[in-house]
Length: 292
Image: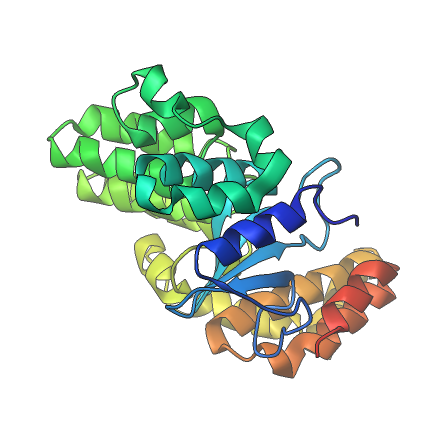
């Protein structure tokens, strides 16, 4: 997979923002599907996500590595740079360093003063209209509606968020479940949380336990998956007619889910890489196994 076109511009911008550039191979202890880029003074890692089996044409999203997995920052590098430039333009004190850091790539994305000229109500509205969809912005918008007592708008925005805007991520469904619960729609909240738990657990934006509680589940899902990755569980799946490649791909996904709960990425990374190798995905296997 080729690196994103403006990756160097992003690295320059992150550095100008006071983050420390880190080696892309510094993956020990981390979820193995990320390419670390920089570390903020607070210790947050901005990274790229390499989906193991990405849909064709999907760009590498920009994510932040968190305790329970990943938080989606932007769908691609360009949107992330664009957003940083808009925010820098509003906080004029930091704009110049960023501007010189971003070079040509930035000039094509955003011109100074565009936000002011747009006469849009606020930064969030501008970002959603002119830059792209960002999970934190949509969540803020929803919570603002709730804060004003406008439950209908909050529900509409929460529903929009979970309608395939961020394929593969469970976070929108978890958040929607929280909103539904807050307005007293308990059974719908449970359903939304259960949908969330069908996504990789490292995309929930919270701990597995929080999502499971919203879903009204105990540890049965964890037990079910622990069972699935045993030799017996795999034999059962093969007996049911599942293709051998699919069984090992499922095993890799299940191991990632369990590591999200246990926090032990380094213990399972070699087996996850092995699974992708057995499924014939040699590039991704090599990528997952590689760490300095």
